[in-house]
Image 1: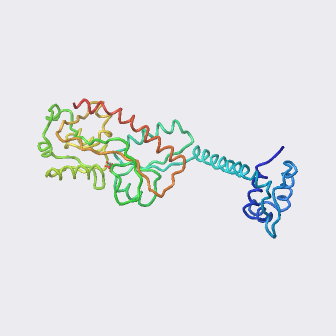
Image 2: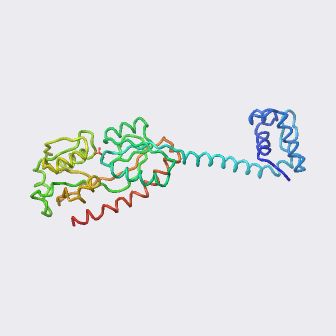
Length: 309
Ligand code: PGA
């Protein structure tokens, strides 16, 4: 017995439309082609599927007896086609990701690992400060955003990934470099090199000082964490930066983390998207990857925190 998916699709279209001509139109076929396929199906199965009731074509008793299975097959076929498209999209996909300036190292590490496993997927990355990330989210620009606290007023879905501790950094020969449990009030008297307005890190530091009744004294304002690190190494002031932005300098012994009471300032990385933005499979894959792999990234920083006791 030979039955084709096309023949079952015709059966379904005739059931839905009640007419051979409408079914032909729906399937982009000619009516004689539809009639011929139905004749072949009936000859091959020995079943008469349809009968005429006035102007309408309806299932016969025999046809009704098998239609359920026929419908199941066509539905499975539709699912198969859908999943083929999805798999194709996944391998050819393009993902638009934006990340906070401070998350530069984290996001590039994640993309590097992801790209090794998913060679066909292109990731377009934009790195910018928190203020600009919020604007991008407002305009539905990126698929996914890696940022600090998600802004409260937008319609977002977010998932907390890992902690992002903000710490006081100083040159290795700073008088406080080897001291432990330095009172925050003492450190607050120093001058700081800070990020630009619009930076999430800067906003978090300002809030932290304000909540403790201290004024943040800043000597220099810089547009990147790289510039802050250089300025701190050069002795132009202390800095408060994310642990995730100073790995290389700590390993090369160019900077130290000061052991200040009440610090680190606790912040977290989140993966964020607009609620109504449907992620294509490639972006979904990257989101799942971030949720899983960022934990390992956090592990690789644990010993820096343990060293501080
Ligand atoms: P930033 O954002 O790079 O703009 O400082 C980081 C954050 O919000 O924690």
